[in-house]
Structures are given as C-alpha cells and as structure tokens.
Image (cartoon, rainbow, N blue to C red; front, top):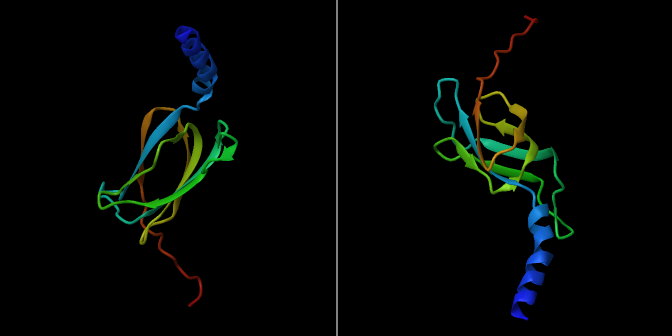
Amino acid sequence: MRTRILCLAVILCLPLAVSADPMTTLRVEIKTLKDKPIDRASVVLDFVEGRSIAKFGKKVRTHWETRTNQDGVAKLPPIPQGKVRIQVIAKGYQTFGNVYELNQDEQTVEIKMNPPQAQFSVHQ
C-alpha cells in the first residue's frame, strides 16, 4: 500500500517538475572602457520574451532594479530563461541598453560603459 501511495505521489508531482521553467542565475559586471569597475551603477532588468512567468496562477516579478557593488557587480536572483533587456545608468557615463538571451544555468553579462559624448553648440 505504501508503495502505491509513493508511486501516485511521484506521478502527480512529475508534471510540476517537467513544466518548471529553466532558471538562470545572472551576474552583471559594469566596467569602464579601461576595465575598471563602476560602483553604484543602476541596473534595470525587464523580460522581453520567454516562457510563461506565472507561478501557481500568480504573477512573478518581471522587472528588477538593483545597483552594482564596489566591484562593479550586480547579482540577480534566479530568473526564468529567455530574452531580457538590461539597462544601465551610471553617473558620468552614457546610458546603456541591450537585449540578452539567457539560456544557461549561470550567466555573466559584461558591459563596458562609454564616457559622455562631448556636446557642441552651433550658436555663438
């Protein structure tokens, strides 16, 4: 009898395990063009495309905002694989944005920030 109950429990839980979205632990590294880390840069992540982001009928977060540490690193919790847009805003640098495909268990995205463009006036 115990064996039947155990088998039934495994069979009932199998669809949940199979339907679970593959997850990625994401690390974002923000650096200057000379490979120096940029601390306190704002990192914004939004889902663009991917598997359903629902858990037991509840909406799961599809937007994260964080900042880099003194090593220029922002770590995010495990998130479903798919396409995400990463935007970076750092004082003294051009704003950055790009779409990335997350398709591994652990993934690092390295972003090099450009200094601000010089502005010229045509008026004297």
